[in-house]
Amino acid sequence: MEKIGIVGAGFSGAVIARELAERGYQVDVFDIRPHVAGNCHTARDAESGVMLHVYGPHIFHTSNERVWNYVQRWDRFMPFINRVKAHARGKVHSLPINLMTINQLFGKQFSPAEARAFIAEQADQSITNPQSFEEQALRFVGREIYETFFCGYTRKQWGMEPSELPASILKRLPVRFNYDDNYYASKFQGIPEHGYSYIVERILAHANIKLSLGTAFDRAQAGDYAHVFYSGPIDAWFGFPEGRLGYRTLDFEIVRGEGD
Image (cartoon, rainbow, N blue to C red; front, side, top):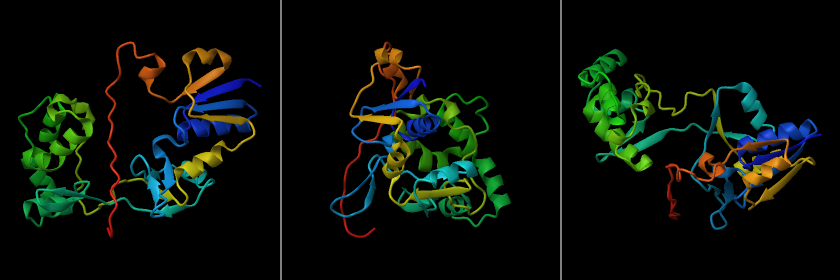
């Protein structure tokens, strides 16, 4: 049977490796990091005992029942509804922007129809062909909502001014005209009881899979395999001929405290 190489021991690489291994292929999995699960990596904090999402929180969500059943083969998923709160202008608001957010921000008691008409009035109708994220947001929701919720957050997340980002990032009206504060519209969502790394380790636990952590994969090695699945940075695969792409990154700082 042909030998397959997989670069990246995250969810994508692990699932591909498992599916091929169960069909008789010999699979080599490489990851330059010393752990599996990629950015979903989880580890138990030694001091507190808390299951830590090392690269930031990940909530698994999908409306595909087949996918939901698949991940539950490897661990029990604990019920979790992602309800986001934002600190803005000295108040705490519910996100995504919904009827409660609108009424609180503007001091109103709108019905859904009234809120929809009000937001339409706030929108900058003079912008007919938005070119930037900023113009698209102003066209959708107007300046008050844009400056309260979108401007600073977008600048922080992207490291760029909203006026420098393409309008395509904001493709549709980011507002709900009801009181639904569930961040995701997916049918299923939850967090694995034993963490994501536990799941990926179990997926990769197969006699036909050889896992090499802390190991870089050189493109020259591709000739050793019938096929290579690559899930790393695309610019790295080509050796950065045009320099490095401007990937979004976050800095993580560990803060310990008591209570919520």
